[in-house]
Amino acid sequence: MVIQNASLYGDTVATLVVEDGVITAVDSDTRPEGAVVIDATGLVALPGLVDLHTHLREPGREDAETIETGSRAAARGGWTAVHAMANTTPVADTAGVVEQVWSRGQEIGLVDVYPIGAVTVGLKGEHLSEMGAMAHSKARVRLFSDDGVCVYDPVIMRRALEYVKAFDGAVVQHAQDLRLTEGAQMHEGEVSAELGLAGWPAVAEESIVARDALLAEHVGSRVHVQHLSTAGSVEIIRWAKGRGINVTAEATPHHLLLTHEEARTYDPLFKVNPPLRTQTDVDALRAAVADGTIDIIATDHAPHASEDKDCEWAAASFGMLGLETALGIVQKVLVDTGAATWRDVARLMSEAPARIGSVDDAHGRPLAAGEPANITLVDPRAAWTVRPEDLASRARNTPYGGIELPGRAVITLLRGVPTHLDPRFEGAFA
Image (cartoon, rainbow, N blue to C red; front, side):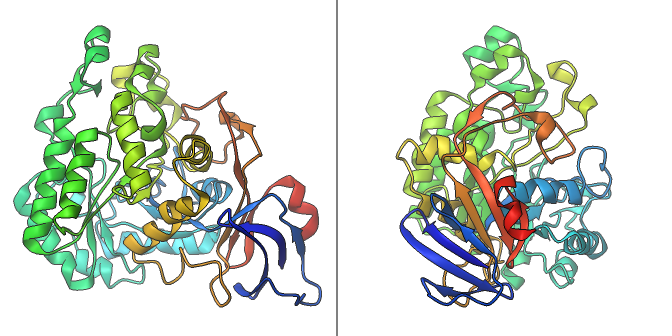
């Protein structure tokens, strides 16, 4: 394959030559015989995106998503690797379950699926899971999370941080003080008071972020904090990094775009954990992404069956789709506003997540000769309107229905094999 006139990282226009799953040349006059030629004029070439926070629901909730439908959604969104969360049924707390997820991802072959193992047995927060067995399984698990549930007991959290040091793993924390959020429905503030919905205070997140940063420092281990949502959490992460603590953090596209004002609709599509916060929080998150305090952007893609969202707010499940819309939202709120460049996007959505997830031997690699041909081509001018019925996910719980996004992935290559093609390029591969 020859990809001509691509804008590498949104900077230099160059030609990429791909053979046998590898980038063999950049800006070369060499044209392998019989090569497929792609005119990428106007397209931005990025390393394939890596999502550190995806819910694929399989095994157990295939009515909401499967590894196949989630992989297809990921490929359409420009992702070449996703990390699958452990809150499945059964929970991914044994080597057998993570190997099942990993093998199914390999069988489908649209993205590399890396399972995240549970920290505790059954996500119950009482006993550590078989982390060592999962780490040494063929799935090579390096990240462990009870996502959806905070590892609340500080003794259990400390032991987990100590355990993962043996194989350079990390504990991935869902920061939520369970006692401060009992029955909580949305961000605690003026809007929650007006709507009569139980409030979710910012301190419920911030207190756990601070605790775990200090535990990581004490143990000398690695902690990754999921879906930061408050300005206070940003300041704690900034302080911890300044102190030299080995902590990383992520923000989601929806926390970079939406606010708690959306709850005025009482539409459960906007019900998410942690909740949408204030504009002040959104501005702080955007600034932290821009200055590097927040290391990555991750989707927290959370598909739900229709009956779990098509109900009153209080009864609805938390979560929203994210794989197919993330890139467009990031372009809208960061690139098009001048807060970030496409090279920053490569760092935030490919290079840094691959490094944190310990998969940077295969993903998040430079667009250079000798590197794996995991490539995403983005058309920043391909504005599109989100239609839930057109998404590849089995679920439909996107809050962006009817919203126009400015750009999208048009070609996704996994080791040189097209896993997503915009219709305009399908003829080249016919």
